[in-house]
Length: 163
Length: 365
Image (tube, rainbow over all chains, first blue to last red; front, side):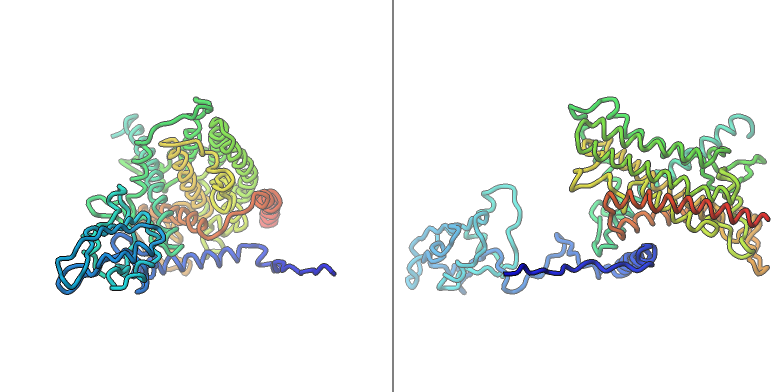
């Protein structure tokens, strides 16, 4: 077996004007200056999003914060079937079921808490739900907060959110 | 309105104006650096600090920085040599301020029948004083590095000492050509000489009679001011912060201020030596006098304002040049810096001196 010899690419030898640097520096200065002037004249050409005032448009399939869907009469669609906490790999969903006043529906969630600090945004809860009651289409991610308790989202908060 | 009181007032006003001009330019410079850097890199730059909802394009950020630094804890590390540690930032800032003294900001003017120079001190050793005084900034940096009692600042200080000393040699030599052409080291004389015309067409500015000297001097100035592409005294990855790693609060801000002041002063010096100082092209005491014989006469006050404005604009351009170059050219490796200093700039400046001397000799014949 022979040892293969690989020819590494060496940098091209610089020509004299390039070696002197001055011409190249002048070209580079012109390049940076053109960027500067363009950005002064056309501020909207700058791609930076000024975050708190302007928010990025999230793509439609972005998995953001959860929300709970409502029926037409305003009650939550969720029937507390426990599919989502079962599918959840992070064990961040806590459901307490209660008997529903509606005779057509067996149960409803008394409590539906999502611990946003544990959630990994995998979207398995959405796929597990048989009633399309939980969605992740709010297009927004976990906001910062100053206590752990504030980041456990309750059923009221989840029902309020809009897609 | 004559007598010693008048003289004293003139001296104080001159010092006040020049000092506040340089300090003000430092503020604007810091702002221009941050905003200019942002625009060059297609970013937005500082735009949050505001006074009563007015952000002034981020102009208040340097002010906010200064206030922040003022109110921080004044801290001296355990291993530091207390006295030297405190002295070091002053040693950076003081020589720079001193060297502004000999720069002429305008022609002589007569106020109440007395001739007043727009220059703090017209020393006959002129630029030699600038070289001597600005050479002392190196002490501040070495002292800061050593007195911190920590290894990283020491290495940073050593590095910048080596760099500044090696470039000081070619900086001095690159100016010998200028002194030979204008036959003086007195700055007011050099500026006056630059008001003449070369071949009756182009102004006899330093840059036209000494183009190589100009490039060499500018390069050496960048190295002296520890700016990119020669910003080796500060290396976040290898030195943490450089010679001011252990400094905080206002002492750190003094280092930064000294650095920016150094750049402001060196741009004023470049403008004075190579771009005619307060001379405006083709502008004479009575008005414009173009080479074709065409002339426009202007009142005396307009001429004076144009001349003072001329050095202001030139200095602004060269301070901007520092920012511009910083965000254009990547930094050199340390051995490249040393090679450029000793093997390129030094022989070139010596050759420049030789050729200038030869040409002057042949012209005299």
